[in-house]
Length: 218
Image 1 (tube, one colour):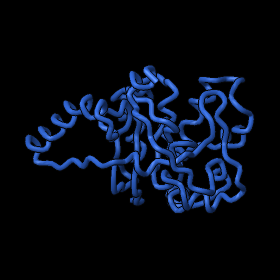
Image 2 (image 1 turned 180 degrees about the vertical axis):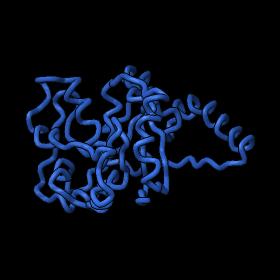
Image 3 (image 1 turned 60 degrees about the vertical axis):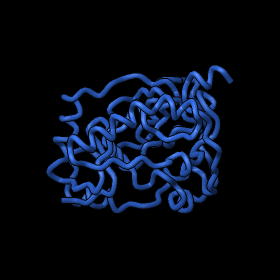
Image 4 (image 1 turned 135 degrees about the horizontal axis):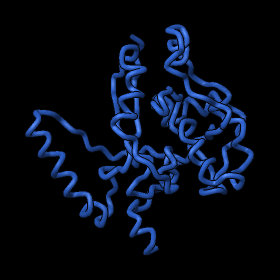
């Protein structure tokens, strides 16, 4: 078994929030639900080979933390439900202010988004908040969310998507047919040229209220 710190799988590519500079591009209005059957197919190719410390289901994020009163009121029913699950299933759920760790991993938005080009992929990898977020997508393992879901951006914006992304779009995930040696090498890989799409410097920003209604009002 190959150890994985954090293995993530999208339940949905769409999201009911619109967070600036989402590392999964979920603020770009993507559609699609990953069915239980499809998720099972993807997992079947890896479950006997991977030993994740954390397994994370993502998509349609109703419990991402933000401290605006409007958002806290909206999310309160979900928080109560989580606390109910804790009691009923003798489990523990952590709610943390994840927005305090967010940073810009690309420039602009929509078809105008562009990669950074700082020329220092090693420093980009060291500073990246997603460097330990291995994705399971289309049955393959992907180094990080920005690389895994970049193809969704290309499909959405077509020829209007900047050609500056073309080198990164050549990245492909590790298939389940990979040998044990290839799998171990994949998980041990740190900085590589693709990491240069993200900034070498940390670009933090104040996260605005992620509710779509708040965005329309502003």
